[in-house]
Length: 268
Image 1 (cartoon, one colour):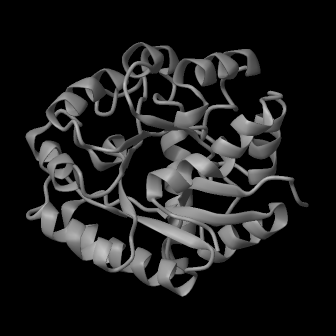
Image 2 (cartoon, helix red, strand yellow):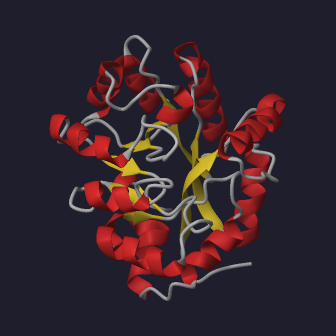
């Protein structure tokens, strides 16, 4: 199946084959959402081939500081093995030492930025340790946060303006339209900032009319297409976006142009 757009997926998670099934089950349990993908890079690339996704941004999360280097090594190796199909964001943790050193290492190895998931990593974006992570990336590379969850207080949209004030040169992507399960709060705190947001893990819970309002609030120049693989399948996510009947210009930006701008990349 093909679409008349260049499609890039800014939000995918991959895991080593030997732990992928366990990791996917853990995510499904965390969100109480059925999962039917296996979370391996082979599965991700098969899905991308089915729908014509040209490149995907691969992410992973270190639940503990001691896992950071090992997980980043897996991402570096996997992304470099599939450099024509993948980009990667490394992981950090608020409890780690020398985050700047790890940022430098992963960028030299080909990673394009850093991803955090404070709720799963068990720290708050307001923690001093987290602030060291932002400082390590400010003016150096983009960061993506899982943002928002009404069950927790680690990544709520209300925390983001303070981060931007302390780190004004930070390029930030706030996933899930800026606030998973807290979309109203996201607009309240983020619409007037310069953060980017992605479309992932939103259509399943938010009606199209509200998604259109979210797009209007942030503007088409700040929105990135993402599936949150393996949580959701690409075909429905693409079809959901197309069903909004956005302009051709908006779709081109959301499907690919905005991510290329954030990453400073071009496609051959």
